[in-house]
Structures are given as C-alpha cells and as structure tokens.
Image (tube, rainbow, N blue to C red):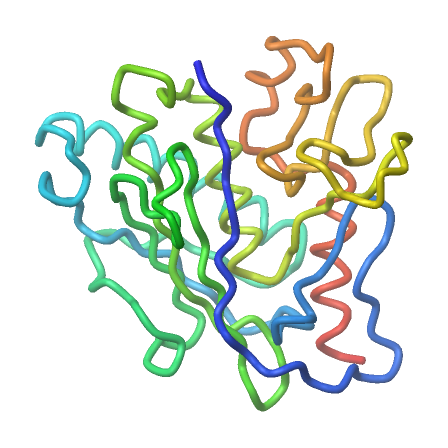
Length: 252
C-alpha cells in the first residue's frame, strides 16, 4: 500500500500583523499565521458533507456510500475531540451541503468535506487529500473552508488506505481547516529541509498528527500498527498544545 498523504492547500490571504502576545509555534506544532489564521473563535463551527457523485469519485454508488459512512463516523469523533480540547463547539451536520469553492463566498464557521478522485492541486497528485482553510479578515480567526478527500483510498491499488489511516487523514485535514500547519522540522540530518515524517517523536513512536504527509500515534519509523489502530484519528499531545494555543490567541 502506498503512503496515505494529506496535504494542505493554502488560499491566497494577506499576512496580517501579529497580535501582541500571540503564540504561533511550539514543540511539535505550528499555526498557519502566515496565511491569515492566528486563532480559533469561541463561536461554534459546523462540519458538513458534500454529496458524493460517481463521476467525481470514480467509485460505484455502493462504495461512495461506504466511504461517506466512514468519513462521517470519524468526523463525528473529530468534532467531539475538538470540542473537548478547545471548548469551542464543533458538530457534524446531517444531510448534505453545497460545494464551497472560494473564501470570498465561504460561509462563516462552515467546513465542507467531499470526495474527489485526485483532488490535490496543482498536479492531481495521487494519494493526497487537500484542505483549503479560510480566515476572517477582521480578526484573523479560522473562518472555515473546504476539504477534498482522495477517493483513491477506497480503490484497490497503491493508494488504498486502511480505516485507521483514513481516520488520521480526516483529523489532519480538519486541523488544517481550523489553523494548524504541518509540524515538520529539520531533524538530525541537518539538511536545512523539513522532510516528510521529519517531526518530533517519543518512545511510543508517535508523531504529531499534523506531521506531513500524515502522522499520528505509532506512525514514526518502527511504530506499532496496533497503536496506529488504537488511537486512529486522535490528536497527540503536540497537536493538542497547538489547538489550545489557537484558542488562547483569540482572547489575547
């Protein structure tokens, strides 16, 4: 199986002046402040699903239904995690929402999630999903945005992904949508490049879930698949620190 990768697609946003006292990075986490997001609002956020179509996903109707059910199950868990960690309420809506395409018309605190075949732009990179976060120009808080999940995860072949990897991917992309950046840093190789999976780790072989292309519990080299499954889709202590910083920045 190929590597399940999740990339962040950043919208063209201004670089706002940093608020006094705001914190944008720490061990194992980083905030997308360079792209306009500095904080998380205390007002509620709602996650919606875009109705999948066979033409967009290259999946059968039955596989679209199964993939949607899998995404909904994880998104419900991710929303509960975020509510508990940040104190801001996140919910998963029932039904479907129209596709969002532009931050200038995106709805406040709405995050849409849809399925597409190779949605990563530019280049339609195989195996990559993509988040498009938006920011509120008035206070640089996370506005919402949209996420496209690569339907290849449900197609037999190099990019088919286990349920645990899909869960990690979904929480990773939601993290981008509310202001978390990739957590990669130049490591012991000191090659002046933050390479894939080059992130802080611990004795349990955990990586920040926001590690690129996709981290999580047990995802470092030599990690246990049992641990990956046990903590699928759950933010690590590093991601939690970043999420709490996002929320704290709002009131600074």
